[in-house]
Image (cartoon, rainbow, N blue to C red; front, side, top):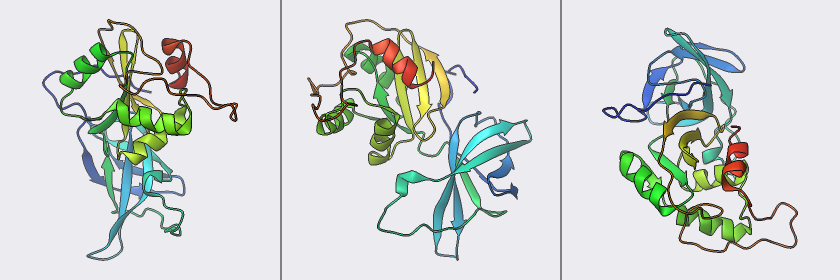
Length: 229
């Protein structure tokens, strides 16, 4: 997993479009680019005819050498709808690949309003999904202790591919689909900690009927474990 530092003068995550060069049952190969890092995700689009193009898979960067990059194939679940059958189409050479797909939209999980203001101002090129929306979703589920699956679903509902986690003095940009850390940055963390994270929705209740529903006692420890740090 590659951890990068923030370059002030550059756009944080640039979408990178290219073509499939090689394929196998589980992987595709594309031209490498400085815009992508190990762990980042993208989508593969297949054209059925001149008017019909659709996303058929997700690809996660598992290897890159400056010339070529290898993507591990996975289901692109953001657009999955149970009422429709799976397309069943595998990527072929020449299919379009869009890396860092929807990396310009992100959820934000931070301990207080001070960090929220700092991060959203610093990274204004990202469209931030307000934490109130995510907190309202947790309240509906009676889950003040969101897990990866819940965050992933919140991303899908808001058409986002990143989550920013502010933990102590570190900020982690995490891919919604695979929960790989794409970039880390230093943050200034001042103020009291709100649980489960900063939002104007208060007191998310637990459910007596679910063993998985409980309160978070330690913000830093909980989210470090959640993202594998």
